[in-house]
Each structure stands twice: as C-alpha cells, then as structure tokens.
Length: 286
Ligand code: NDP
Image (cartoon, rainbow, N blue to C red; front, side):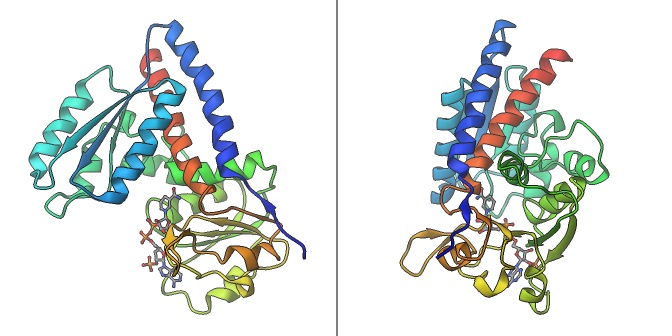
C-alpha cells in the first residue's frame, strides 16, 4: 500500500532549535539573554502541560524563561497591572499569557494590553493587522508560522497551489490562510457553516485541518497526492492524542502528511522561541 511521506514536525522543530541556539549565543556576545515571561492564571491541566513544554524548550536554546503563576480568582485589573509591569521590564523581551483565561478576565483586553513588540504569540491586533495588510515587522502567530516553516523546509511548493483551510479561528485558520495567500497559494476557507465540506477539501493541493474534531477528515475528503497538515488536537475514542485527520487511511492517498502528536505541535513551540529571539534582537537594535 502506498504511503504519504511523513512531515516530521519533531525533527524540523529540533533543527530550528539548533539554529536558534546559535542565534542566542550570538546575542549573548552583545551582553543580552533573550527573556520570555509566561503568565499562567488558574489550574487548567492542559495549560500546565503546554507551559511546561514551552519552558523546557526555552531552556534548551538558552532563552531565560520566567513563569508567573496567578490564582484562578485573579481579577482582570491585577493581570493587566502585571502586564504593565512586564511591558516596562527591559529584561523581558517576550510576554505570553497562556490562554484560556478564567471567565472573569477578558482575553481581548489582556492581549491588547501586551506591547506589540513583546507579543510573541502574535495575537495583538497590531500584529494581526500587519499580517493582514502585508506590513513588515509583525510577529507571526506561532502555529500558522510553524505550518509555513514545515511546508518550506519539506520543499513543498506553495505558489500557484490550491490551499484549503478548514477552520477560521483567529489563532490558526485565519492567519494560516493569510500566510498561504502571501506565499501565492489560492486559498479557500471552510468552517462550520460550509455545505458539503468534502466538495471543497477534495480540491486541495494543500489541506490544512484546524477544527478540533476527531476523525473529521477521512480518505474521502482528500484528493490523491495532496499535502495534509493536521493541526487538530483531540482525544480518540481510545483516549489517545489525535488530530482532525484519520491518519492511517488518509496517509494512503496523501503525498505528505503531518502526524499528531509530533507534527504541528512541536513547531508551534519552536516558533514561539523564534519570536522571542527576534524580539530580543529588535530590542538590541532599537
Ligand atoms: P476554534 O474552536 O477556535 O475554531 C475551530 C474552527 O473550526 C472554527 O472556525 C469552526 O467554524 C470550525 N469548525 C467547527 N466544526 C466544523 C466542521 N464540522 N466543519 C468545518 N469546520 C468546522 O479552534 P482553534 O482554531 O483554536 O483550534 C483548532 C484545533 O487545533 C483544536 O483541536 C486545537 O486544540 C488545535 N490547536 C493545535 C495547536 C498546535 O500547536 N498543534 C495550536 C492551536 C490549536 P466556525 O468559525 O463556523 O465556528
């Protein structure tokens, strides 16, 4: 049985971390250590795991990381004051507030409060606006940027291809569509109100699934030879971590496919490190 080539996010992310490690060493010669501060509010189990992964990755490349833990009942004003303090701290190059936040806090307000130059998640409206309008100097959101890097480093041609993105969230679907468009793909966006999803996905040369529904994309959704990027993070009925794509059956028709775990996830963290290093370099040059 034919099998699509695996796009190994774990390996590409490791290469990226190696590159960043030498960048960090170069910056160190100028007397600066890139610094990332992660703010974690409450006790969300998944957030704990993500934050641990981010901090471990920082350590590996020599980025200084600080974790600020705030209790679940933290008031919005308290968090905003903490962000103001970090905005002023010159040793902090990147600020990441782990989402989701407890109900009493507006994520929108919190994201908007982070100085765009320290917004290493790339979610601030100024960074999103720069991405949308094609202005230079934006921090790109980590997951979409990670997807782009995976495609490029796997030598997959984007220009002139038809990319179909399933999902239109601000953190994945929308920005990945913009990035692919910038790379001269023809982009179709699908979402929960799309009628006959398979009609659209079957036309994709590059299919990005960013929904969060186990098993949504089956072999029947994929054109033979397509490149399939699976962003979804779900639990299979057996309790295993799995994407939106039925991996085994889709691999039989795809030319390239990302696994879950070991695909987009590690790339997301690598691009966070990349943004932090970029933020430190920009601070040095300003
Ligand atoms: P959201 O819930 O914010 O967005 C999901 C999108 O999927 C929405 O646009 C929604 O449409 C669309 N959708 C829902 N059901 C369907 C359907 N049946 N057919 C087509 N489209 C549908 O999720 P996120 O974008 O934040 O995340 C998506 C997935 O990616 C999740 O599993 C998340 O855990 C994972 N993720 C993984 C990351 C990684 O690093 N690997 C990073 C970030 C996310 P509508 O807009 O109409 O509601």
